[in-house]
Amino acid sequence: MERFDHVPERRCIACRRSFPQSELIRIVSTPEGLRPWEKGLSGRSCYICRNSECVETAFEKNCFARSLRKEVRKTELAELRKRIDITD
Ligand SMILES: [Zn+2]
View 1 (cartoon, rainbow, N blue to C red):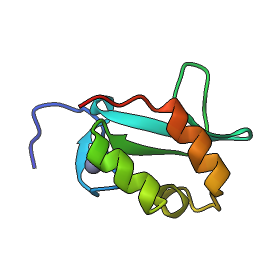
View 2: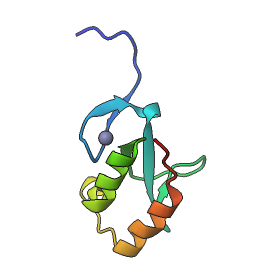
View 3: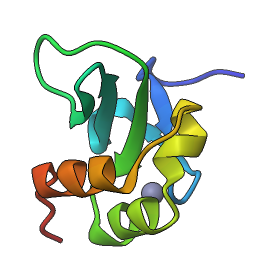
View 4: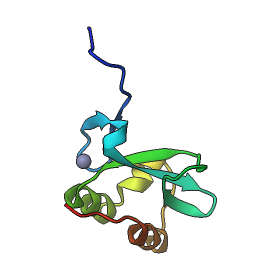
């Protein structure tokens, strides 16, 4: 199967569709909790579409726990939600 490019694709944890990594919000599991990716952060990651629907779904269903295979507490989710700024 021939592809035009080699853009790495990642799956959104909410809608489960694949998109180029650059179009998604990357969430990193750090020792301090879940954080939107920024320079210098590394760790197990998951991705969400940059739209409020997928972001809300991800938080409502706590898709992070499933995707990262770790327990994610409600307080941790609330903290992360404050750090994600989404405008459709
Ligand atoms: Zn999505």
